[in-house]
Image 1: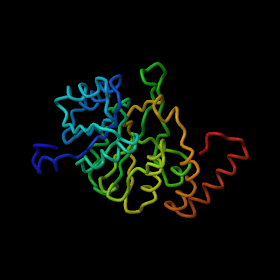
Image 2: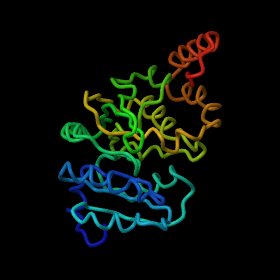
Image 3: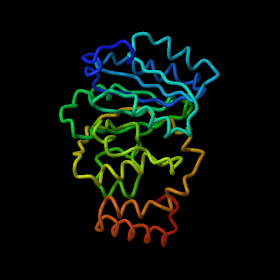
Length: 254
């Protein structure tokens, strides 16, 4: 935020944090989707892993966006997002992949931001990078603690109050599902209210990093995380459901 006054910094309502590395093929569309909404009080925080392609030039071309740019080595996507949390000044934080797009529903969600201790979220729509396949809604609707214990909600549909990150960070133990681990903590924390708004917030690229990598450490730890953060009742329901699914031969239940 170099050169900005403290008053200007506090005017940031939402920081959109994006981790990039040689993302030139997609970043233009991502940033354009943000610019097209013309929302006041938006800050874009790009944490770049040292790109050698046109990524920096693309970011610099969006002069209408309030931008924070940092570039240098990192330990992966979630390390970059943790750095973005530190650099952000918004009262709420949103996390977007360079290959994702905001939808008009983001503006509707943005307009709901009233209570500083509330997590606001909607739904996301899946797409396949360049639109070759039709999109569909990803696990839309409100998430209870138990539903979240069963299924990972889409990270790109959530606006977190900054207070969340005074308590939590992405756990770098988990390469793919650190966001899921974070949501288990947040949904289990009674300090934070959760409000669902029935809008589509973002297009999520189904061909990204999580589609080609697994996270065995998270799968090993998931039941323990649920028990620790969501309580014994949710844990027992989850374990019973897991047992039944395994008996049925299901492979899509984590």
